[in-house]
Structure formats: structure tokens, C-alpha cells
Image 1 (tube, rainbow, N blue to C red):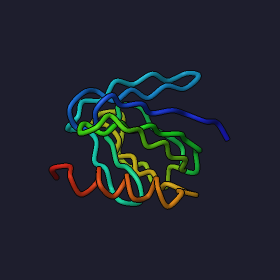
Image 2: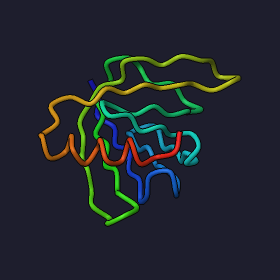
Image 3: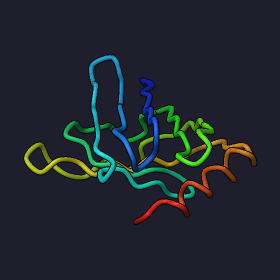
Length: 109
């Protein structure tokens, strides 16, 4: 499996960047939804199911970072309309889960 990284300098306020060996995406804030157990985003490029990813989210309130590991559990769509990618976080520490919950519930839907 390959690893990918999504970095955000302010969830739902600035762009999200996805970097991989052959992929670099800049996603608009309205293309990202933070969930208590993962993240969903729209992408012009597909991601294979079970692809491992590392995500770093930064809180707009206090600039605290939440780093999460996870896997892509679903990628639906096509090259014409784009892809809806769902990623499930795995192995979150209790502290990371609490910070993620704060981000997920604070974010407008």
C-alpha cells in the first residue's frame, strides 16, 4: 500500500492539499467534511480502496494539530464528475479523538 498525506492549515477555511508520489491535489474547503471517525472529500483524482493515508488537521481556534492515520474505505464517482472519497481513521489516541470530535462538531455542515 502507498501512503498519502493531506495537510490543512485551517479546516474549512483554507485549501487542503493532498500529496502523494504521483498525485498533488488542492481541495477547496467546501470539498472537505470532517467526521468524528474520518474525513470525506471531493477529488478530481480517484483513490484506491484500502489506501493508507496520513492526515494532519489544524484547528482554526488555537492552531492545535490533529494527526490521524487511516484508510480509504470508499471512492465513488468518475473522471467527468469527480470522486467522493471517504477515509476512516484508525488507531486514534483518546486525545486525538477528543480534538477530532471538537473539529467535527464545530465545522459547519
